[in-house]
Amino acid sequence: MFSIIKRILAQIINDKRSLGILFVAPILIFTMLYFILGDSGYVPKITVYNVNDSVRTGLEKSADVEVTDAMPELKEYVETWGKDAIIWSDQEGMHIYMLDKSTKTSKVLKAVQDMNSSNIHINYEYETNDDNQLDSLSFVFLGVISFFFVFILSGMSFVRERTNQTLERMLMAPIRRSTVIGGYTLGYGILSAIQSVVIFLFSVYVLKLHVEGSYILCTLIMIILAFAAVSVGALMSIFANNELQLVQFIPIVLIPQIFFSGLIPLDTIPYGIGNLCYVTPIYYGCTALQKVVIFGDGIDVIYPWILGLIGMIGVLFILNTFLLKKYRRL
Amino acid sequence: MRIEINEIAKKYKSNVVLEDISLTVESGKIYCLLGASGSGKTTLLRTIMGAISADKGTVTIDGVKMPNKQMLAKIGFMPQEDALYSELSIFQNMKFFAGIQNLKKEIIMKRADELLQVVGLLNEKDKLVGHCSGGMRKRASLATTMIHNPKILILDEPTVGIDPVLRRKIWAYLHSLRDNGITILVTTHAMDEVTECDNAALLRNGKIITADTVLNLLKKTESGKIEDLFFIDEKEESICFQS
Image 1 (cartoon, rainbow over the protein chains, first blue to last red):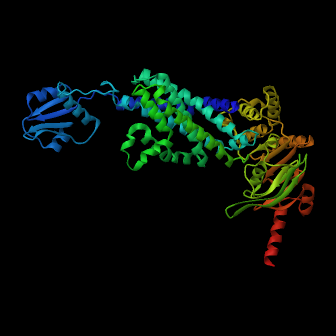
Image 2: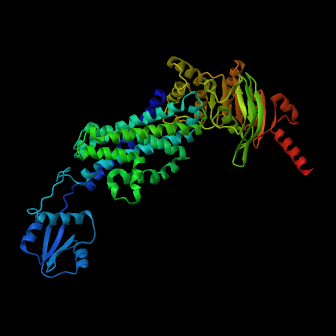
């Protein structure tokens, strides 16, 4: 097993492209997410008509406000003048007109909310008002992004082992099938563990991601999840005859798992489809991450999800060892 | 070590790949499986190794039924592809495959140098396999196959892509191994290579057309060319069909 681990590490060190996929690509994606979902400081452009001075000055606290004397043609005005919203009042109350739901129009609503900030007090139990969208969804991205790259890398490597017949050569030695799978899982697992640490440290210390709970616990969850990703990659590669076929598994294997990552509350999914989460490693990993990153929970709370994840790795290990019989009967 | 193949048959759905193959490879002999692509040579080798399960029949080595882990340790198998890691150097590949055979470091170093000398790659041992030419990779693959000093060599098209001078050198090395009691089973579709072997079986469509010592096989031809045996058999089939 030690030979396989050493070989995998030597292979990756000599392969700059794989190193890039493991370490540079996730950091780049996280950086992009930081700019896309982070607080960009955008000031919404609002035109007001027939509103009293207190509303106007209230909106001016967080928006660029223009006053008009005549009720404009709504759609034409917004599109022509590049406004995010038109706000007016009549006997029915206050109206807000916007073209669609977007990050810009959410800033308009935030400005409206801030307008009455002296009367409305919003508090989140688990998040601070400084937290942006990236902070709120960080547990999803930490889990999914690292899972994705490790799945691709380990799956592709295993497919290549087969198409290049190195697997066949390896299995013609008196080596146990479980040793092959174990060596493979540990070899790529070690690389994934390093990747998890790099991603986490970068997110926390460079991108200033807000993590409520223990950093060590977060990294540990990511490492266990990465081991699961290696096992899922190896499993899928057994059913793929070439690299292209493995890529074709992504919509089937990865995308449904993202739905169970905590992006959508599971109890809102109809017909009990949400129960499928129990067979997806990302559910266990991301739920545990959510509890640590957002709620600040410790091991005493998250251990069922950790155990679930370890259990899945165990099941996948047995399954992969069994399926390797396809290449050697012994 | 003696390999005995008894009535091996294999089919995929309705496609018959091997049909009642029986042959014996005597200890310390070079046995050649000769046939065109798709004739069943590789499938037969993989069945012997236990990578494929036969629908019927048995393979035994020195009376031990295959597949058997202890026997696998005594076999060196060279697949048709190079079966090497392109991100590792030639030596790293040899070291890895020796490692899974539980060879000691000092033995690996000595054996690797010896074998690389034979295949003419001693000065290139630190070159990444991905940077090697096709012929170099084939030679590296052959050297890797022999790293654990196997008692049986099973080689699937070992000399494809290797230049004639080096090919002669490799055959001379295989002869020396045979003379030291190593049993060698080799597949090829290069007719001229049969004369390097002691025995040969000609395969077509998963069936053995004829099998004998190479000397006897050559006697059966008028021209002394082994490929004529394929045509003789075709003529016989055609006569049978017409009658």
